[in-house]
Length: 125
Image (cartoon, rainbow, N blue to C red; front, side, top):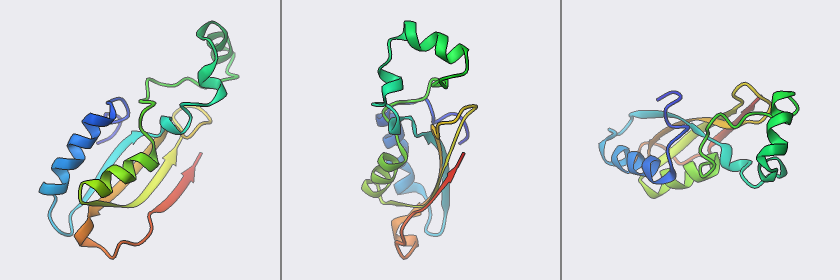
């Protein structure tokens, strides 16, 4: 998926991962482009009143949120994969027309397909 899983709530993403954990063949790989906005959800910028934030966004001092799900992050996605029999082999954190790395490209396999190496993390501004 690309640009469709950045918006849904955690329960929707977890339901998809649950199904993928049962349907993905050994050796098969999955790719999901999802939100990493949860990494910033408690930042000072997100706590600003909209009346103050909006002019700063228009002046390009602050970034737009692009309707990303604030309840999802790369870390949480990895946990949800583990709970559903999947293993993230790599995650690339990317920006979306801004400076913050609010999106994540996750590649995963069934847990029984790999030697459970640590997830390769890439930060790509």
